[in-house]
Length: 127
Length: 369
Image 1 (cartoon, rainbow over the protein chains, first blue to last red):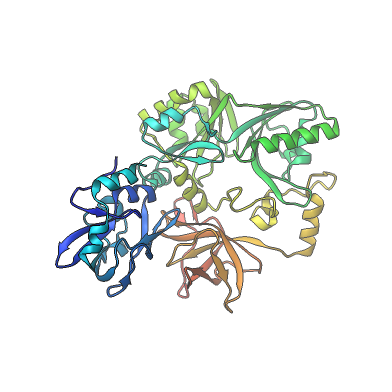
Image 2 (cartoon, rainbow over the protein chains, first blue to last red):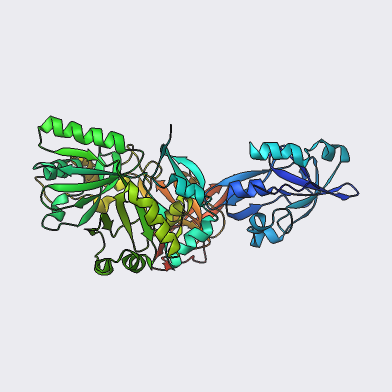
């Protein structure tokens, strides 16, 4: 059973978003996603200032065996990114909701509200 | 309907993530591919490889069949019961039908281990040759047997101790012994020392349990793939298939042309290919930055496409991207090509496989790469 914190909201492409206040949202991949991807060895994350469009590819996550696209869960602009991931991509596996966060995005609260809650995401993750 | 090995329930109980591989439900990984890979490189791990299929070949014309069907020459095994040989089997045009290991069991008896994907078709192929030549050979599909590979620098001594078979400690590479219902060959697909144990399906769950109790952890297909690629070993269906010859697959060393009277399938095509002296080649590449993936294109210094990646991974042992790639121009080890990764060009150094051998890298990056 993968962990799905109640306090976060989720996309159907297996990213989570956390409301940091003032229109800022922290983004990462879910525990379910990291388990499916396997041991991650490389993360290509969008640069600060980049405009993101919800549901489109914004980066790449690579495991030993495969490359997977990273999708933007929400439309907005990148304010910060987790620089630690370039040297330690395994943080995505070890702590996907904590030190393995990917970026902080400025976005509209309405866009955040459209994301799924934990209960709805659990149905997708378990399907 | 996918098939299950004798260890299917055991894998589930170990928390394995199962995948469909060539029609079999196989463990992809247990907890971590990286940890499983590291265990095999540094100590020992074991794999259920029961999707690979033993086929027993017996009869007074068994040797004739194998000398005709295989590109390598089983005459090398004569007078050496227990000895094994790696070979390809070819179409008349030199394309590779499958790759396999054949063990000589003395007299007129051989055992072959076939890839899961080709086992049925290969067996039919052998039977067709037997019928055509009216050879006296019996093929026995051994669906009652499964295979466990124990691999790593400590594998042989650990298995010798666990199964109380001291002879394993002096077993020579590519040789097998049979004892207590176990057929144990000093072979593998990881680049490490180790053994492959063929045994009755009914014995396998207990064997797996004993290995685990002895501190030898299971490893999945994901680790098996990263280990074999570091060792520069081809995977059938990915690095080679019926469209390419052994010479185009870094397997020229497995073709035995020495006995000019031996008429094996594909021989004429291979001799013609040798006479032309050119054709595609399978090479290794390593990248200081970027991870190569199946299908990525290689370019030469002028920016002209010259090859394509057949298998690519991030190497856990080397901590860089490595791949096998098929190129259509001659390239020397150490030369630099460009790999196109999502539109960007990354320097890729040509490496003669393997990439990793006996605990160390076989190459180092230069200033240019």
